Image (tube, rainbow, N blue to C red; front, top):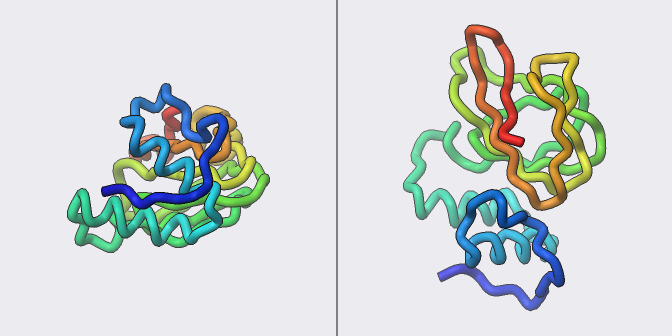
Length: 140
């Protein structure tokens, strides 16, 4: 059962175009608006549903947007309004990372990001890393 929250948004923060089920989208919207520790709550819910055990496959700390952000997990909430131009990860990292927009940050080219993007607050951005080109490719 999804956690309940007394805060009901008038418009969803998580767009229907992401293809999420309505109950999950509604719950994520309420979570973002609630002010609770989004990273810990996502880890609790998603980790138990998916059964993650690898530390890289958990929800990491909330990151403040900056020109360079360093990821340590597969999912990170991101705050702030600074353009991210570079994502740093461990040398053995491959695959995707999911960033949850908790602020008005953007993705910008000029570092190792292939395409500029401006996620809405509450939107999830999946970025896939290609080690051959050392580039991140955003889903939006």
